[in-house]
Length: 119
Image (tube, rainbow, N blue to C red; front, side, top):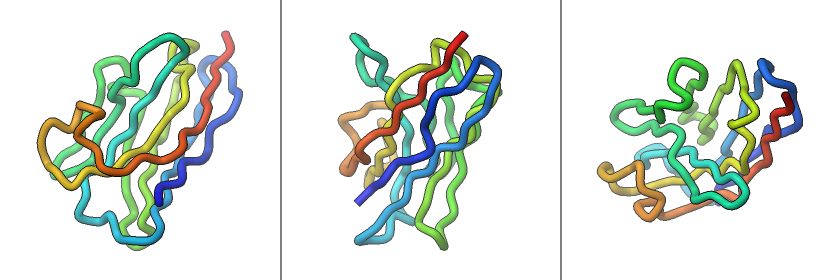
């Protein structure tokens, strides 16, 4: 029900825009999050859009989350990409409005899209 896309192989300093398209139901009243998981590491919070907008310190000032409720889609604009941003990026939806930095809070997950940033 969540389809993430937009990943790719880019060079350091480049930009990408990830999209998360929802289908089957409306997620307009859900908190939407982006997480990422690098090889050998745990899945980590990147950004959330719910009643507010939140970013991990590592991406603050470089990434921008937004949503288009008419299209049932959430975006993650990633600028000034760094090699340490390399990971599989997942979008997720949560009916709850608390503990949103925890992956376990989320009810639905997309399949992930690979982002690789070369130096």
